Image 1 (cartoon, helix red, strand yellow):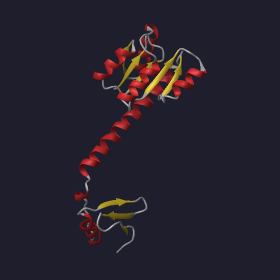
Image 2 (image 1 turned 180 degrees about the horizontal axis):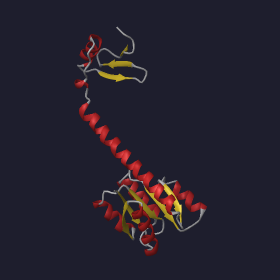
Image 3 (image 1 turned 120 degrees about the vertical axis):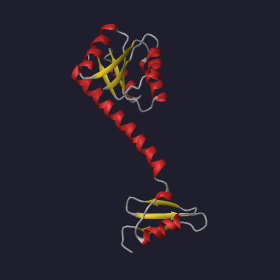
Image 4 (image 1 turned 90 degrees about the vertical axis):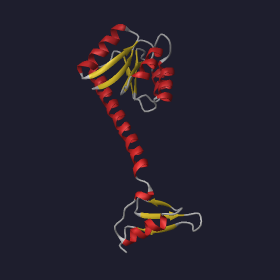
Length: 188
């Protein structure tokens, strides 16, 4: 089940939005201030945040900036009771995942939260795969079956670096011999 931090100081709006999210199978954690939200995120593995623009202790913009700094991959959906174009433009410059003006269309909010959760999940998977690639696919673990590939691996096994370009060109380079290019798309 997706977990969303809902930061809303108005008790009625908070209960309504939390109810809408629960009905969609999303688990909301309700906070009523920016400080409470930042503290809650320390111990909550949230998939997204729904953040009110006007809070009693801080502006939504300042909380969004803090979230971006501490949890850069966490999608934040901004909620505002003000229907001001200037304010909306200023908030959108901070690049929230989405922006809603109250009263909020429940179906649109659920759709946006689900999209934010999917994006967060994909970002987590990407970071996991990047770590796996760094850990498991080092130069010394390259396996090639053809004699030509074995020669490339042996040639590059010293101080050389290898780069495989999108066009199928293998570039090797070392401090002593300079760059050499091989076309690995052509048979030997």
